[in-house]
Amino acid sequence: MEKIVQQAINDTLTEIKTRAPEEYARLEADPKSMAKVKKAARVGAEEEVQIGKSMPHGEIWPKDIAALLLKNNLSMARVEMIKDALNIPTYQLDLAKEDGSTVLRFTRQGKEYVAPRSMLSKTDIDWAKMKQITSIVVEAVFLVLQAVGVKVAMDETLLARVIAEVEPAIASSSAVQKAVQALKEIWNNGSIWERAKAIFELVKATNGAGILWKTIKAICSNMDWLDWVETFGLVSAMIIAAFLTDGAALIAKIVLALHSAYQLGKKIVNLNELEKITF
Image (tube, rainbow, N blue to C red):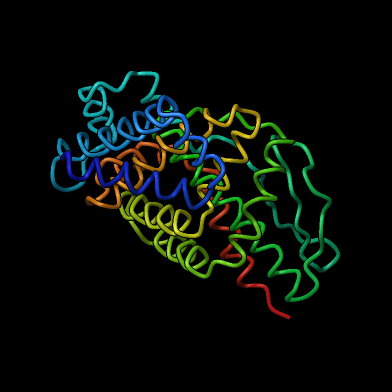
């Protein structure tokens, strides 16, 4: 266990050094700050490894996952946060037929988010797909943040900042787009555990593309520098520990969240419908 935890801490510090060299230099100059980040990383890594070790082999019911998490000293508030992780709104896309053409409408919490756009060409379809993929990816990252205990509160201004940061990275990452495609295919035919494993693979891809980092930094943009580096340390170490093992704990947490995945399911349906539009 300690070997995996230590590797997760070391890899997290390497990630911080690569992504934020100025902040890393400040950590090196201040041993107390470095100790705080290492402690946060240890908390994330140890939780993942400990819960993973206690997971039974095979698929278990969500109520049993919740009981197992409580047994491993997660509070009921943490368990409820995980269950609610897919209810953090980004935006919803709705496709409708108007005057013989398909019109895409964007809403957020029942209000117009972006002006409607008619799907008149392949360029429009590709643009719409990227908007929907971005929403799916960002919500997957929100899920992971809440799974590790970071409460996500998202107003429209902050959401716009997050989308502006991550959409170009998603557009340039074939690995992330392939992971979303795989999630779509499994969503249509797979079990809840297979869907959770597909989201886990998507999280792997977002981490590799730097999207996890960009999202956390955008969400924490109003925090003191040390607070957001600590937050990244906590999340990154948990995810790295999951990658170093079989991801059992994180996948189980995703399963728990998927029982409130109605909106995510609609986004998958939208991708299916967009792919059917031809010219």
